[in-house]
View 1: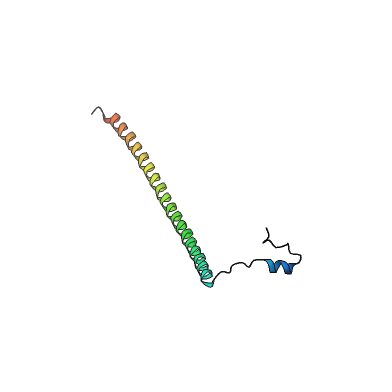
View 2: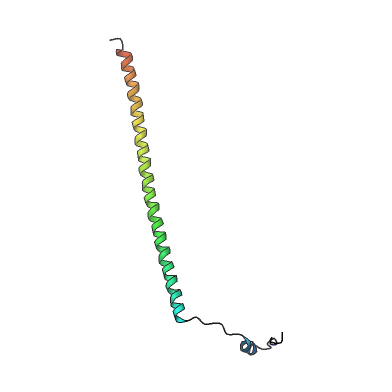
Length: 95
């Protein structure tokens, strides 16, 4: 406890007693700036890729809906053909 300094009475004394903060070297600053820039570029590419994937999935969903509608139409035509074939069989079944 003997190495503790008494509390400062003025701001000037507080500044004199304060331990200086370690400074960041220019190389570290440059490295941090580069890392920030790379993170920014990565996020832009990530967002753009997600947007492109969503657009592609939307196109696939539209194609799937069109295919489903076509299958439904084919099913209706098949039912109508079956009904007509049954009518023909009933009408000409005795020949």
